[in-house]
Length: 41
Image 1 (cartoon, helix red, strand yellow):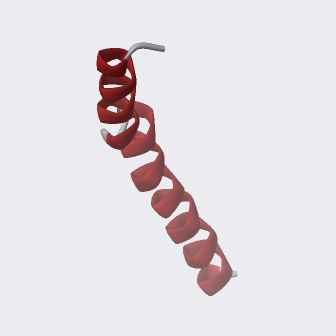
Image 2: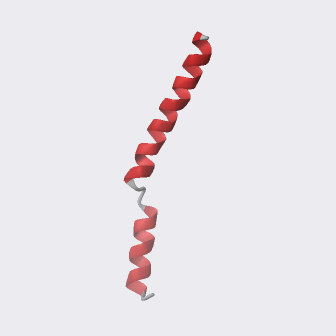
């Protein structure tokens, strides 16, 4: 790999991808739903 390609890859890897950004809220929402269900049970 050439140096510019390595730098570009590192920059892309450091940037959070949209899937990661969307996964966190959905995971938090699932945890809230589970907690809510336990409280209501």
